[in-house]
Length: 321
Image 1 (cartoon, helix red, strand yellow):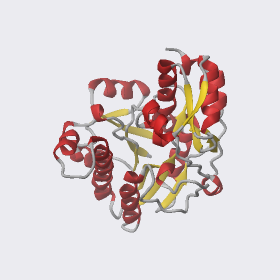
Image 2 (image 1 turned 90 degrees about the horizontal axis):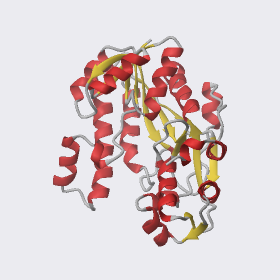
Image 3 (image 1 turned 135 degrees about the horizontal axis):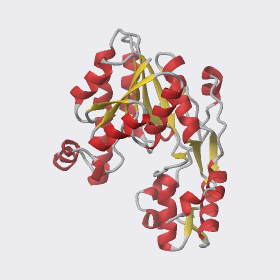
């Protein structure tokens, strides 16, 4: 299968490219820079020039492929395309810059999937899109069959999930892969490295309240295998959970960080955590466990890589400043 991959040079995307090539697929990777294109070619893939806000480049990439895995996402305001930043600054959406930015990246993601989906209508070609377990209700173990919660921390992902369901009814074999807050492994630049950086700078590792609230997690190499299986075997309209560990107490995460950095581990109130962690404070306080039981049953996906705490305990890369 010739697979068009957006976000093909990112932390997860670069590993997805290797996974697909290793399974005998051909890869056409979206590249928004010469360096990205060179990295794709060096990996054995073909580069397709474009970007998340260049909808025509997404359409032509999808048209040239037998299936699509959509991983590209805007994770920081400074990395956002100029059009997205202007949309945030000039929009009449309610809330401050951070709230408007979250809305804008959700809309940018939906627009990208709509452009790709337009090309695939009626073809029964697979389209795998990415969402998050954080888009589900907090406070209990959630499953793949559950719809998203509009009050969740990742509610901005829900319009893309809704679009994927609509495309499934129009002859596109869409599948949604929901990832946990923590995807760890070599090259991790996500939430846990930020927690570590803050603990190092402030000389204290903190958790919120009693620290019993839970984060789910998955190793990158387990996650990329799930994306391949969803592409190859996923059913139209299906939702899959890339969760290896359903719920790790955040206190346990803070304790490992404190032990490795040799700094105190303390409990903080929600206001204190908001000041300590910034935008990460409310997220780190969320209780958001997720199950992957149905995913494992339906796709035969079984995580085999080390868990998050073991990875933090054993890996020097997280604690090398």
